[in-house]
Amino acid sequence: MKQWIKTDGVVKIFSRDLSWVDDEMIGILQSKGSDLYIYVEKKNETVNRIHMINPQMHCFYYEEMGFVPSSRFTVIRANKDDKQIAIAIKEHKGYKEKFKHEIYISRDSLIDKKILGLANDLMNCIECRNKYDKKDSSSK
Image (cartoon, rainbow, N blue to C red; front, side, top):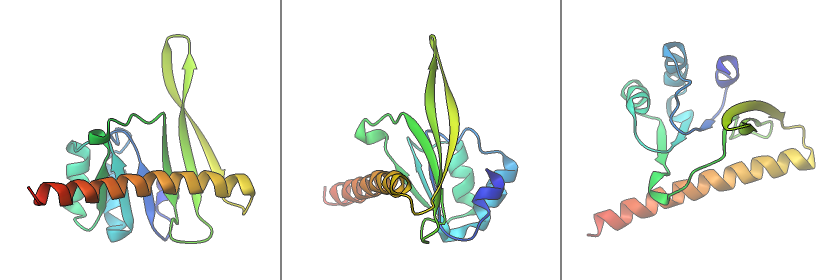
């Protein structure tokens, strides 16, 4: 994942809490500057650490929406035609849940375009909701 995120272009990370981010990954995320977009449930220590070293990053929260996603994903080169997506989905094994990572590579196939389109729609929805919440709270 580290090599993946290092690629040129915009990186969009959709995660619950970024629990997988270690010190080395924080350095990589710092280098992305304003090309880093993070979508997380709520502010936490990891988000705060990343924001302190990369104040140019864009961060959006979805907790207020009452939304609990069943997948996590990262889109690299989100601003380019050759974007790719890595998706982690919940896999149920008895009473336990774990995440299974699947990587989809955009090759102009119809399924890849649909998956990336849905991921973008979800992220855009959360961005719009965050902007609406900011407008609403400033008018009170």
